[in-house]
Image (tube, rainbow over all chains, first blue to last red; front, side):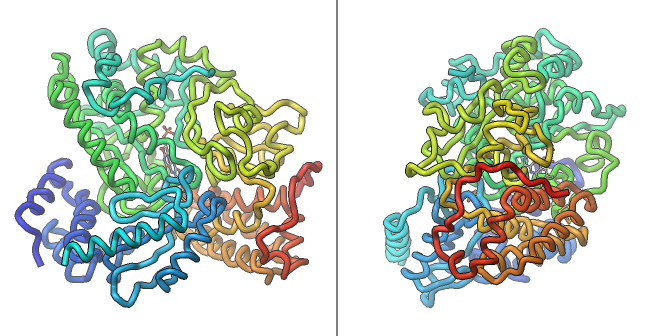
Length: 165
Length: 450
Ligand SMILES: Cc1cc2nc3c(=O)[nH]c(=O)nc-3n(C[C@H](O)[C@H](O)[C@H](O)COP(=O)(O)O)c2cc1C
Ligand code: SF4
Ligand code: FES
């Protein structure tokens, strides 16, 4: 397990944002990078690699990786649907969206489809309350969700997988 | 139409990019301060403006800046708090997405006032596409000589970096934010020492909200006195309100603090009224942590005054019958919504987000969630309401950071103003599982508990 040369450059750039000796500050962004590069989740091996890279103790990495909700500590499907269900999204029907995903894909929050394509996760407020109901999908938000939009998103993901195979 | 100072140019096409932003008068405030003002002048100007922190607490910004320690030879830091995780709040995101240069301009002026040569924007990890927008804007500003060394020949150096969080509401609390920026878990620090003395890497630090820093730009351009003329009393200037829930126009609005809550909810210029022809039932006017108010108390105070969208008026009546401006996250519930269920989702949020350092917060938030879940699902007992009340009181004031209060207050206010809705759930275990809760439109005198 190793970052490509290009990713190492990115790590170096992140470290350069901080004063001499304060490279531990790079840990959170580097973990994002590692999660993205090594399968969408953080295995112990990945975390140990990050520790070596940043010259800190593995425990310092585990502490952080277990604290923040964006790090996945178990494998997830190729597409992670993170549906917000906090107050304002609930007022605008997030429950129906979660139910619809269950009906459509047969997965409850925390579960992954058998073909490992989709994982459903409920999350707490993502700062999109005025565009509810919503979910995060990769780097972007999908907002004002409806059943039709969920259909289209699932279709889009399946097409991407077909195209990449 | 109210005065707009932050969003006045937001409709201009491509204002996100440097050339357009500059053509529209961007970066004038940097020229003004670097060429004609000393750092102390800028601090004084911000004091005179009456600007209060827009992140939630409403602390006077100029005063906060004047507390910054200035030991010889030690760097000072300006940190912009873009963690924005309080349910109901999405205004900073709007500002950064559409007007990234306004934030950067405000940061340069503020960094100059504070003597900070290196500043960070700490942004919640989920806003990852905004990181790209900000980094592009920073690069543009740098290429045009507004960042880097010896800006405009003034001798002032300034760098700005963007740092992503990774999903933790508590990192919005300023000392938790600093821990996170140091690459650690977001556990709030015990205060004192305050960040103004020992902040990032133990250096003097100021943490300010995105909107607070953006507001520095019009203060410098228009002059503090002009800025202070807008608004009522100690609520000066304009405020961004992110409005959501069951209203017609959900979105971000800039208000000058002279309008009433009623106008804000019902006028077409703002929320446009309640959606689906329903009635206003309740509202949380300042983000999930502030007390919920039933319609009657929201629109008028117990003294019979029209309630205004100002810090003072929203707080009038204290905990018994008032609420707070908070972060400006305005959540509206129509008469089809269930306060118990809504409060349950908030309690779940706080349990999920507690950092776990203090037992009253860690354990108490878990209990509140469990009990509310029980009541919401028709399995509660009447004594559970008192138990909930008791738990929230034991959290309030007994924790390291204000998260404890933030978790306790929503539950307290829901019980205070909607106790009969909780009782109804307990008495009607079957009915309460149905979608329409049958309890609506509170327009009765409030009952005061404790
Ligand atoms: C639990 C908690 C969460 C907070 N979240 C935020 C936040 O997301 N954004 C923010 O600007 N301030 C937040 N604050 C307030 C900050 O601690 C701090 O007061 C603020 O950033 C100061 O900036 P201001 O004076 O410009 O408002 C939070 C406070 C607490 C206790
Ligand atoms: S009050 Fe809660 S969030 Fe704040 S330090 Fe204590 S446990 Fe952590
Ligand atoms: S409640 Fe869902 S994004 Fe805020």
